[in-house]
Length: 172
Image 1 (tube, rainbow, N blue to C red):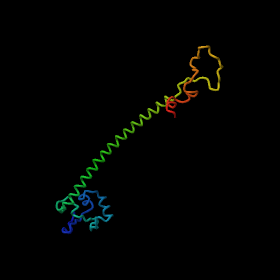
Image 2 (image 1 turned 135 degrees about the vertical axis):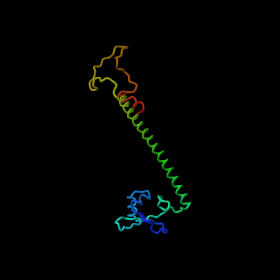
Image 3 (image 1 turned 135 degrees about the horizontal axis):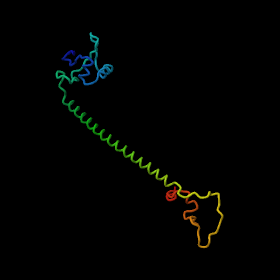
Image 4 (image 1 turned 180 degrees about the horizontal axis):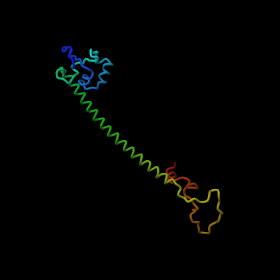
């Protein structure tokens, strides 16, 4: 199906399908290269589109192998090494990112649990008594006797029960 055109010029006339197979890419990639002008094309008498490949690009047949420069081979090998290094680095980073996500999820869960616990501690623990506006009749206790449940002296001041203990302790 392919025709060798000017073997000395190093080009090969093939169909789009064969060009894709020889270059190891898809037919869509060949069509895109034609659009960009990186591959020459020609309409055949049979109505098919033929492209001209540089024989040095074709790795599928030994006749198309042109001796490559050792410097080019060395550069290609260096690029392959760099790609392999970057792939390994990307894999490591993916594992690290997953581990960080797990840590953040654990911290979020712990934070939610601690927030719920703080709300429990802030809940009023004193029994509800008479409203502040209602006053009890003032009776003087007998000498030496105190009323049960009503201390006569509050060490933290008159409004010590208005704030939770941790706010009084840390002053917020």
